[in-house]
Amino acid sequence: MQYERVEGGHAVVVAPITGSDILLIRNPDRRDWKWKLVAETQKPGESILQTLKSGLEEEIGLKDIKTELGADGKIARFVDPRIKQVVRLGEPEYLENTRIPHWRHFYGVLLDDSIMSELSGERHTTIENDGRGGTEVEDIHTMKFPLAYLDQIPNLLRQHEELIRSIPQRTRTIIS
Image 1 (spheres, rainbow, N blue to C red):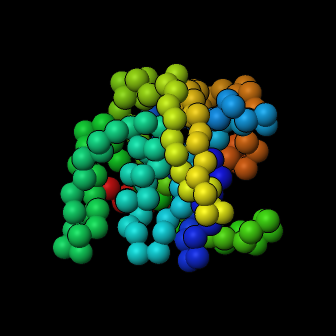
Image 2 (cartoon, helix red, strand yellow):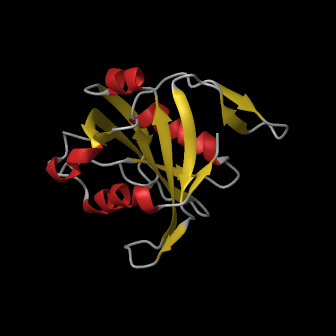
């Protein structure tokens, strides 16, 4: 669950949410596992919705997301009833004081309550690019948590806790 390093790529962090819950992921096989948000790399030329779709399918197991293509052949919008809305949460941020400086985009994906419950507690395996020319096999575990009890989530990645706490203050732009 590392960010794939792609020349010209951007980090995209996704908060799968309902009105009161958030879905987080972790890799329990790692010694230093943490609960965290979905993170995906947006590759040059890829639409943000394609990046979001990849993250939702690979990281939380939301399969076969229905989309509509634009004139350019890229995903223009989600038409899947399980996804109520996609919003950009604030403007992209350039993170300089990190091991590898990069742009970070933050999105919220409002899911149907029943889908959130179905996805919670699931385990699945993904095979992803490790960013070094190889592959990484990940065992991903999902769990929904009440947003009201954010302080009680064990082993929550600090940077993602800060992002989650910032959601109410962020400007929202509807994407799909």
